[in-house]
Amino acid sequence: MSAPSRPAGDASLAAALHVLNDEIVSCRRCDRLVAWREQTAADKRAAFADEEYWGRGVPGFGDLAAAVVLVGLAPAAHGANRTGRMFTGDRSGDFLYSALHRCGFANQPTSTSVDDGLELRDAYITAAVRCAPPANKPAPAERDACRPFLERELALLVNARVAIALGAFAYGVLCTLAGIRPRPRFGHGVTVDVPADGPSGRAGGLGSISHIVCSFHPSQQNTFTGRLTAEMTDTVLRDARRLADLPLSN
Image: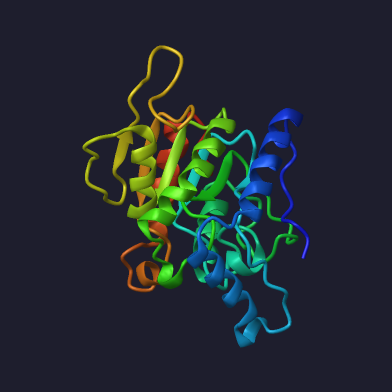
């Protein structure tokens, strides 16, 4: 399987992200995660028996000039760990990309493979942890080992103004990078201002991001039970557009 395609943009930025993404793809820091992602790739689901799984660290994806960055928990075992692109090929991604399309961030409502024609506009999608974890629960040491990747990524996305935390795990990582202590309690729709770090930058490791917007994670557990609805997700995405000074989608 070839590496996931990366969006075009400023040559120096694209080159820097290419270097970072190569490090993410080849990373083997966490023995437990490496063993799990590779075992999952070998023990394929029957529905994907004829596919070659990615089975490596998963880089971010989207518009290099993005004003909004969505941060998830980690790749799904038979989603991004299979396809090599965040939130692609699983039910969570079906829900999320449909919302991104409705709110003007994506050119199509589906995401099935890295070559399906999906393009993001003004948005970039990444995760706090880059390897699929057992039971979707990274250990604290695994979270901390992966955090520098996110910090470097956000520093490169110089137009980003808003981060959407898809779940409490991502929210905690973003607050740690921003140096927010104590952090406001997580809740869907909660917006947290990132404190300024002098006149020309932001605090901590969130690059140019000035707001964190919280959303329940688009997991099946949340979407199938109605804890997270399409309307709730659309509201968060529209709030992010407003905070990033982007025009609202029709």
